[in-house]
Image (cartoon, rainbow, N blue to C red; front, side, top):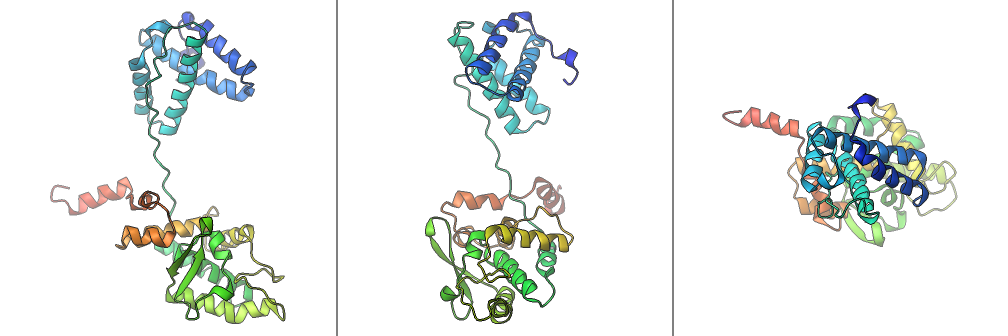
Length: 307
């Protein structure tokens, strides 16, 4: 329904629709672009209703709205778009009752579409290897960046947790890290040999070079010896991604997602991963158990006797 002439609806709807859009403009003070968006959604709905034989407000019941949303879903539209459509229709129907254009609101008991959570973007293991290898030199900046990347991936640390690490709270053998997360909650996370080696190399070599005779508790530092902040940490990850020939949208959180995804794919216990990520609820961690539909179909074809 892209051509303007296709968006035609019965004139019986004109007055109620115009009154609603006027109320949005005058009483709600909505911006012109927002009003245009509401108008487009509702005109599309009313055009569909007209073509389906519904030519008055009273003829639109809950079933009509559900059928319309089902038709939109069949077009391949996202659930978020359907939710926006239903919101606009709901507001219109409530207004029509309030202004006595209609005596009932057919959308009152309709549930909102269940919005699927966007799955976290995770790197492949090969991409992670390329990213971690990007700071390949032995200058202090490469040492720091390599250690930062290794910590983010090895521990699934949030960026704030990584830059919040302090030398005075490090366990001497560096086999675990104490991370302070949301709500100042502390958790202990194991750190693998490669990450431990990179972190040790930075602490014993590059970091003293940056500090000189100064003293600073934070593990990760800038060229001036100040604590590395969140913005600079993001920049270092993005710089490494571009250096590795990867997408520049990669962020510290991408490494956290990759940590969880790779652990679960390798057979790690869900609750153990929950603990390491510092999630308060197991439901938050469960998003990482999703297998892409195409991957599932591939597994079915490969292993099922009738695949």
